[in-house]
Image (cartoon, rainbow, N blue to C red):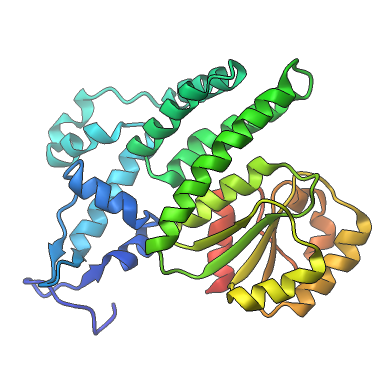
Length: 303
């Protein structure tokens, strides 16, 4: 335990919201929403109004995550926390994630933008972004990708979902960057041919983990990344792709760029599995193709 932490009335340490966010993986916006909207946690306040959390509050956050991970709506969590005797009385549908994914797929295939809006807002109101990514959005994109191989209208469906997520993710990143004070990450697709959905989900995961994000919609020429990284003072460059990419790019140009950068060059997406053999001995850092797990690996690299 850190010796210079503020102390509570009982002599236990108190933690600021940024530290609680780091310890639990729940971003500050969600912690505030759980307090204001649902009354799930009740942190203490400094004379200037800053939130301070006791160890008991952090344990309560972990219990909240436990119930959310099991599919319990956030509106029911407080009752479970405050009245543990009711735990067995509330039916928890472990398979509800499947139903939610089916709803997402249905509205995408129907080209229903209003339906997408409703499901997106509902998901973020009920669960932390990390849970939405792991249980809904990543599986939905994977299932849609499989369907799009031989489905009529697949191109339009993809464009609709990409456009929707680009707008919503861009808005969230803009607002999050105003209050987040974590390291800056640069995110981009590795090439013009790489799909846009992967980098959007990765950006959401990174922002939810407390990083500031600069998302590039169009990949920059490889030779310019060094200057961009230095100018912006970024902690890492994350490039994503869903394809193998060319041998010249993977074996020569990317390793050369990694050697020029003063910060880590990381790859995410299916390319990390397709090119796993080459990446084993490369200076490039592979993060995998699951957004939340990828950002956790990045945190270990930056720490």
